[in-house]
Length: 234
Image (cartoon, rainbow, N blue to C red; front, side, top):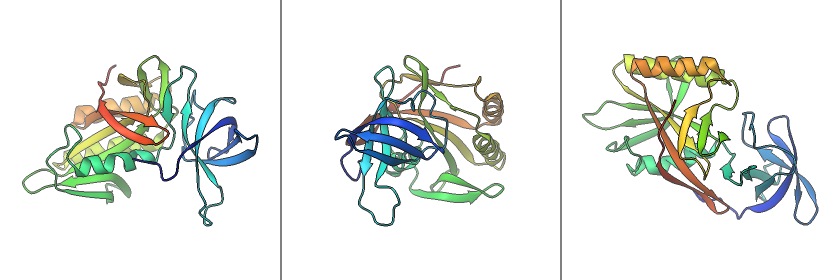
């Protein structure tokens, strides 16, 4: 996935109201940027951090800049836009380039299922079980090389695991796919201390037959590319 316009470097002053960030550009101007991330952004939103912004000239948008990348305290480059995960994955899924999800010829995004939810992707092919794929963007890392999810309590994520388990019960495939938007991760784990309910729901979903995949990314100022699968560790 390439960014629509080249990113510019800035310094984070503060993040507030979840979706807003005050930043200082390299020319000294202070601006407010949109933050497309509803999570806590633990370890990624400290004042003084180097960040990258995507400018726009769309008159329909209230803010002229959107925060896309951050350099964390260990120097890792991290994609902070949670909505980017689906944009990164969609062409790879369509091309059959995601290990474990090859061989499907139809992809539909945002399909209603279960009890009023929408699945990120529904994959189908003649003679194969439909595959319901939920995607989560992973940005947290508290130890070198280890990516973790979630970075705060996520009741919505817990509900999604239950919905996936019910799809397996109806005879379908169901896949929880974690997209790690960090350039320093070589493995992934659940942050059970941050959300014990999510960890318990994950264990129950796996026991019910829900599959789990983790994929790495290579974020950069020009775009974010998929890299290799990552092991899920306990």
